[in-house]
Image (cartoon, rainbow, N blue to C red; front, side, top):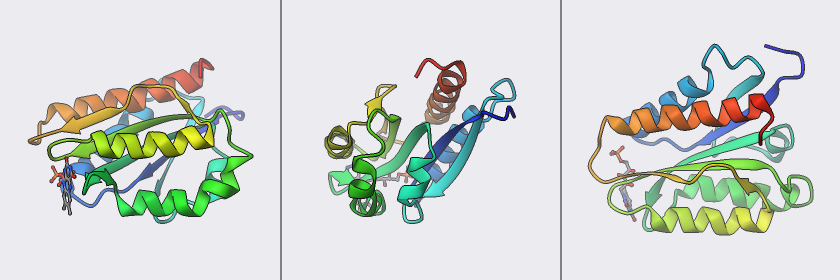
Length: 157
Ligand SMILES: Cc1cc2nc3c(=O)[nH]c(=O)nc-3n(C[C@H](O)[C@H](O)[C@H](O)COP(=O)(O)O)c2cc1C
C-alpha cells in the first residue's frame, strides 16, 4: 500500500445471506492485488459516522430495497450524516448497489435524491441486482468494486 493511498469506504446494510455475498464480492473486487493505492474499509450503515466520510475519497453504498425505499439503516446513516457532510464532501465520488427482490427503482431514486442534495458525484451507473437471485450478481458486484478502486487508484475520479 502506498503512503498516499486513497480511502474507499464501503457503507453496507446486508441483512440477508445473498447481500452479504454481494458485499464480499464488492470488497474482493476492490481489494485486487494490482490495486495498491486504495485502502478499502467496510462499515455498516448503522455504524458509519460523518468522520468516516470526511476521510474517504470514494464511497460505495450497498442496500436492499425495502418497501420501495432504501433500507432503514442506510436512511439512518443519511439522517445522521447529511448536515455534518453537506459543506465538506461536495464532489465526493460515489456509487450505489441495490439488491431488490423485484424492483429497485424506489431505493435508487431515494438515494440519488439525497446524494444530489449532498452534491456527491456518481462515478458508475447504479448497479441494481433485481429479481430472483442469480450467481452472476456476484460478478457484477466484483466488477463494480474493482472499477471504482481502479479508477480511484488511477486518479480518474
Ligand atoms: C420488508 C421487506 C420489504 C421489501 N420491499 C421490497 C421492495 O419494495 N422492492 C423490492 O424490489 N424488493 C423488496 N423486498 C425484497 C428485498 O429487496 C429482498 O428480500 C432483499 O433484497 C434480499 O434478497 P435476498 O433474499 O436475495 O438476499 C422486500 C423485503 C422485505 C423483507
